[in-house]
Each structure stands twice: as structure tokens, then as C-alpha cells.
Amino acid sequence: MKLHLPRPLLKRALLRPGPLLALLVVLASAFFLLNSGSDGRSAPAQIEIRQPEQQNLETREVRLVRFDANGLESPSFAQVALPQAPGARLQAILGALREEMLGTEWPQSLPVPQAFVETVGRQNVAILDFRPQGRAPLTVEGETRLLRSVEETVLANGVDQIRYLLGGEATGVFLEHLAVPSAL
Image (cartoon, rainbow, N blue to C red):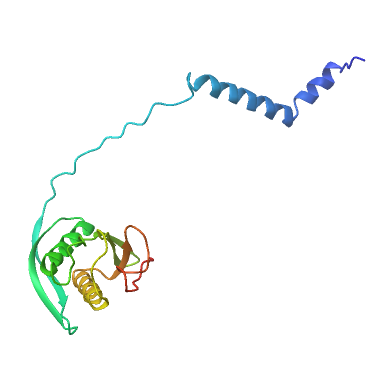
């Protein structure tokens, strides 16, 4: 049995949206297949890595805050070379605080935290990422003094709020003992 459609009926059936869409998809696929190249992969992207330009450092007096064993605040001032970027400025200030507290309240195994400063609403929020090398040998009281010193120093130098990360993660704990805010 042979199926034979009259020519006007066949023409009307092929000009409907369904067959026309299928034909368009086949043509587009053939076009992309022919233009995709021989192996179907594009060349790897070239990334240019530039060395950071020499930063203009500005020496300014900054306020550093320490707390003694009785919880009394002991502010001091230090001349610190500060870069222009807010996060780098804050990191330089915390580096000066670490130098002042190293060996007493700031353990040797705790480097200066990586600092980021973001503006949320109208407030400057500092994000401090502490990355201890091993376990920091601090008691609860020592960790409390260190946390208060870091907080008061950061707040005294133009930041409104502080959030903490530990090893790049929002843990909600300062080093081991104290709960701190981590979410923006």
C-alpha cells in the first residue's frame, strides 16, 4: 500500500509551525557543528598576571588598644605606614597591634589576620580572617583580652562592625573559646 498525498496538502502540512521549527533546529545544529572546529574545544584562555604596582604608603598615627589582666584598657599610639586600600590599611594596623602584643597576649603561632573592609548600608564592616598555625595556646581569659584588643583597635580606626572568619570559614568562634559574629 502506497501513501500518496496531493501536492497542495503536503505543502500545507510542511508550512505549519511544528515542521518549520524542526527544520530550523536542524539547520542551526548543522551550522554550529560545522563552525565548532575539528576537536570541539576552544583554545585555553590567556590570563595576564600583573605584579602589583608599588603602593603609596602614608605614615599616620593610629590608635592601638590593649587590655591588661584586670580588664583595664591601655591605649597607645603608633606611627604606621598605611596603604590606600581599606583592607590593607586595617591589616597594617593589626600588624602593629600584633608587634606590640607579641609574646604576651598575642601568640607566636597566630599571624596577622587577613582583613577585608566592605560597606554594608552606611557602615564599614571589617571581615577578619584568622588563620592560626596550629593550636593557639590561649586560656579563655587570654583569648578574651586578645579579642577585646582586636575589636577596640579596629573600631578606633574607622570601622563600625566586625565579622570573624577562622581559616576562611564562618565558624562563629574566635579562636577556640569565644563566640563571635560571622554572618553579614
